[in-house]
Length: 130
Image 1 (spheres, rainbow, N blue to C red):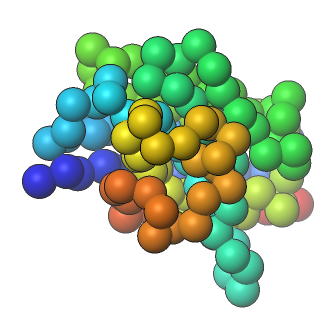
Image 2 (cartoon, helix red, strand yellow):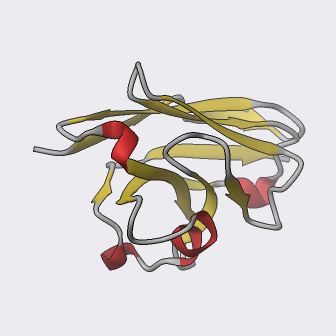
């Protein structure tokens, strides 16, 4: 059974930082591209950052480029999203997702609809106050 579990969400003031961690189990982790997505109330889910199986290639949404950083540790089966310079607009539920590396490149993964990806976590809430 494939399982992705997110942790690290919370409340922070604008300008602050948070680090989200997703831990995978039940899958051959380095066969999968990994990504972070978010969904704010009343909005569609959007791709925030995606990373190849090796970690050498990444893709970021324009709204977070330069503020967020995605990395992965295949030995620990984790993918991390470091967020800095947080803004109230970053408030959302953040989800970790996985897709087999043969299916998409990182940009395609971050643009994919939820049904297109292979696995999703339950989400972790990030709240940024002004």
